[in-house]
Length: 111
Image 1: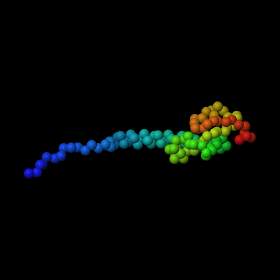
Image 2 (image 1 turned 180 degrees about the horizontal axis):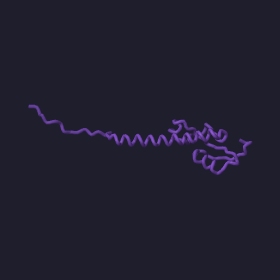
Image 3 (image 1 turned 180 degrees about the vertical axis):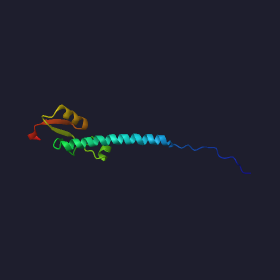
Image 4 (image 1 turned 135 degrees about the vertical axis):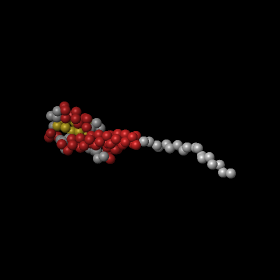
């Protein structure tokens, strides 16, 4: 005689999640990515507006996170600015380029 009782062991699914959780994770990732891209675009715009002010030597180890390099960012190790630069311009350069080792103020004929 065959046993007709079904097997009652349940296999556990480890990666089971709801659509709400998936939506939350994708939304958080999209917000993070948008903020990173906004920061990269601000850096690129600053370098474009001040073409002679930044220097990017290629022989240093990268201080910019790898994902920002993948998104098109460049690293700047030194920033040369005119000696008559305002405190706001210097502070903005510090905010946009935290990896820069120093910001040097120079006369325009030295740049």
